[in-house]
Image (cartoon, rainbow, N blue to C red; front, side):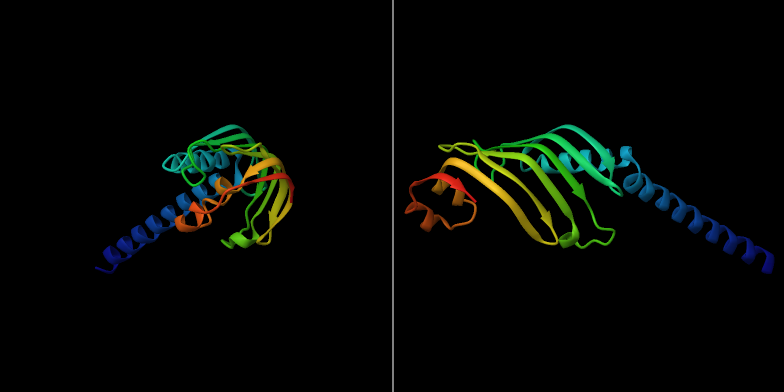
Amino acid sequence: MFKKVFHYMLAVLLSLFSILAIAAGFIYYIVGTPAGGKALVDFSILQSARYATVELGSMTGSVASGLVLKDIHIKNWSFLGPSANIQIQRLDLRFPITIDWHKAYAKFFNARLYLANSEAFVFNGEYNDGNLLGNAYSRSLDVAILMKPFLPDDVMRALHGVVSSADF
């Protein structure tokens, strides 16, 4: 009887160890390898398809060492309107080991937001420790389109105008 219980316990422990080893291998694949980073980025793009059309030119790096995404195009994002178009030439991303998104780091190179009735809104900067720092410029911005995601509809009806030579 004791021998039978011992074999069952051993089988359970070996099964648990096997599951933990497979989980550790999967986590290493996602976090430590470029192929895992690409799989994570591809999964994120697939999930964003409900909200916008996202195209990615190329990607290098891993989640552990940092990802470099190039030639990103975001279209048809309902948050900014159907005519909005975002293009980012290069985006460097680093994620913290803990899941504290304030510790995440992102650096934008030549990010452009195209809105209806406005010139391109160009942004270069970085997100670090919960702060967004950088420089943004546009020759003309339609205030109503720019503020649409942030203001209620009753305020939006009364909002009209264009900002010229905006440099933030």
